[in-house]
Structure formats: C-alpha cells, structure tokens
Length: 353
Image (cartoon, rainbow, N blue to C red):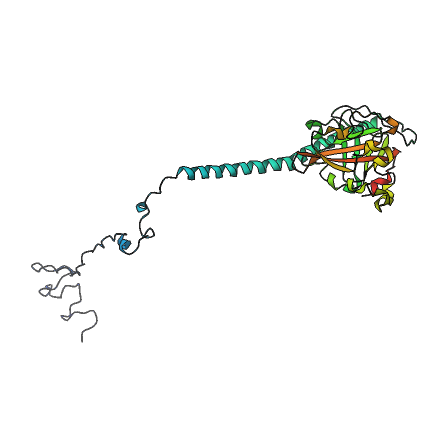
C-alpha cells in the first residue's frame, strides 16, 4: 500500500521524477502538459425561471358580498354625498352653542371667582386706610348715651364704618363705603347717600353684592329675627337686631322667640310705633323700582313723623335670587344698644356667632 500523499507512480505530487522526465499526462507543478484539453467546468444545476404571481384583484368578493368596503381599496369607496342645507345648519347651530357655552362658563368664572379676588384687594385697601385714619385722628369718645348719634364726614368711595354679623362667623366683617355705584360696591357694602347715618333716627341703608365682587350679602336670606348686626364707627358701636318676620308678627308677643334674651327690645314696629310701620318687617322681597324700602319710614315716602317718633333702622339690600337682579332681598333691623368705643372693649353681641 502506498504512503499517504504519494501517487501510485512513486513520485511525490509537484516534483519531477529522478530522470527529469515526468510521466506522460502528469501535470508538473500544477500545470497540465501541452496538448491536453483543459478540464471542463463543473456542471451547475439549471435554475428554473422565476414565476411571477399574477396580481389578484381585490374585487373578487363582489359576487359574494354586497358591502365589500372592508376588502376594497379606500380609493374605490364612493364619495360621500354633499351635506344638505339642514345638516349644515344643524352643525353650525351646534358649534355656535358650544362656543356660547364656553363664553358663559368663562363669564361665570370671572364674575364669581376673579371679581372676588379683585374686590378683596380693594376691601383690604379701604380697611387699611380707615384704620390709619382712626389711629392718626384720635377722637375722644363721648359719654355713654342711649340716644347717641354718629355725625360723620362722609366722602363717596371712602370707608367710614365697619360692619359685623356675628352669626356669619368671626371672619365676616366689611368696611362700609359711602355710595352705591358699581365702582363703590366693588370695594364692599355701600351706604345709600342721603339716608341716615349710624345711630340716627330714620333709616341707615346699605347695599351689597350677593354673588361676585366679594359677595358680602351672599347669605343675607339666612338671617332670622333678633340676629345681631353690629356697626362700628371711630367713636361708637351700634347694635341692630333683625325685626320679626312677616309670619311672626301676629303671634310675636306670646312666642317663645320673643322671650329670648337676644330679642330684648325687638318687637313688631306696628305695635310700638303705630300703623305707619305696618309694612316694615324683618325680611321682604321687592322689585328693583321699590326704592321706598330705604325711606326714613319704609314704604311711607313723604310721611311726616317727628324724629323722636321714628325708629332707628338699619336696612340691608341685595339682589334676589342669586345670579339674578330681577328682585331685591330686603332685611330690616332696629337699633337696640350702643356703646362708646374704648380700648380693649368689644360688645358682647359680637360673641353670639
């Protein structure tokens, strides 16, 4: 058996035999001898021609499906019919209503929240100015007098007093300005010009907003008979109490309410001052044109009654119902006590909340 790598003729591959002549037909150094044909190329398998899959039309389903939009191309869908006039009108009205709703919503947010913030800043400014005036212009308080009256130098748009309603909480307090224009009421409650001053005989009348712009009188409808309303000037405290309601007038004298300590000095004015006050009750609803509710004797414009026969009233007015100005909510109260201002003194009525 020949060794591995040695051809049968005994001559290693790529070497010339000892006699110098290679055997016939044997390549020398990998080069075939002359006269021999080249080795034919290795046969390769013939690749079959590529078959192109014919395009399948996507409307093959037409004969099976009436509604074949799922299978057909988008561009084969029929164009939608043009909108009718009615449809365009409905769409336009809908868009207009949505826009109007957004405008109303923004208006409500502005009126209820934004104006509250603006008015709060103006109220703080008015109160600071009033405190500075009171502290810099010290006035000696007059001696105690149950018939004391307050003579103030009132300037429109300027605060001259502070008002408290204890049943609304310790934080309910507003500086009262002179005047009732929109500009004045943006600051806080406003005093009707030419009505009585605090503590005077007649009708000390104050207006205030119920919604927005600070809404000082938002809860005015919650006041009940005998609830205290306290007004402070630089020299005096005046305590007013809400008169009996219309449905309480007839049986007031025998009612349990009239026996309560808070109701001392409170009674239907008709029984104490006569029929001229028959229409003056704790609360009423009137139209905006009924300005007679702030007359010296409510509902009795032009009545001639001596000052010493007139009640010392406080009248609060505001819009009714909330978010509407179609009517006015009126609260009438009568002065029951007054105190001189003194350092550290606070009327006991301030703790009734």
